[in-house]
Image 1 (cartoon, rainbow, N blue to C red):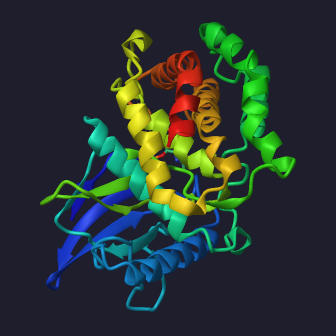
Image 2: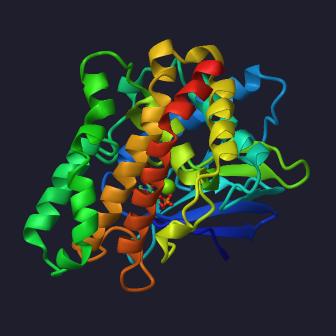
Length: 341
Ligand code: GN1
Ligand code: MG
């Protein structure tokens, strides 16, 4: 059994036994208390993607969708003697993940894979999915959680985060942009991945091309702009998400443009004009929201995101806010990029 990956949430392992390889995960029930709901969504989405893959002869059938495995007891989840929950997928071999997209072409390939994901799930009624983490990309709700954390200040850290708190509370209007458009019926509810980033794409070892979108745990009803926005957020800069010096955050305009173009190419005709027009706002809002989440966790004493050193969640928040400033400065140009596709 070999430990894999860098995710903040589950523990992931490769197991080779009886002539086959399995991707085994120990599930984090603190983050996902309703594993029945997670399992329902993963099975429904993986099945829908597999069916789309069968209709498309240009894709690698075996390696372009996850295949959840049942246990010997015909269950999707098994508990070990300590009560911990485990699940398994067929191992996708000859593939690798990447933590950072180095070149625009790689960023475009990852974004296109998520665009295809959107395209392939466009006919799936989002109401069939269960809510695994309520209000996941509801930025105003995330701001309300930040307000509570500031108010309680359980770890006495609010003073050390005063500039970040001021930054976040000054941008409430930005935080409301997407949810207001959804509530007003201007944007359609969709099946969204909700954790769209290059690290959740597998690339073919042989060709370097994007094979498959992974990590379906947060797939829920959502907006196109959540995923396209998170892709921009996670690839826009080469700085580490927890860089100690936020001045290392530099926008890579060529990569950002490639992400927007790549996502639109994958989504094709499944995307509506209003959705297209929301993608750049999505990048700003989701970057802001991620900073708000890290800042909240810092104030709540690092309960959610794993940390390996003091101040790591505050550094993470600072990086997101630096990135947001850079995206805001480039917003008009990015809107023109989307219009030109
Ligand atoms: C978490 O563990 P990972 O890297 O898949 C988080 C995402 C954040 C991300 C930030 C369920 O994802 O929402 O964008 O960290 N996932 C959950 O690095 O909260
Ligand atoms: Mg994830």
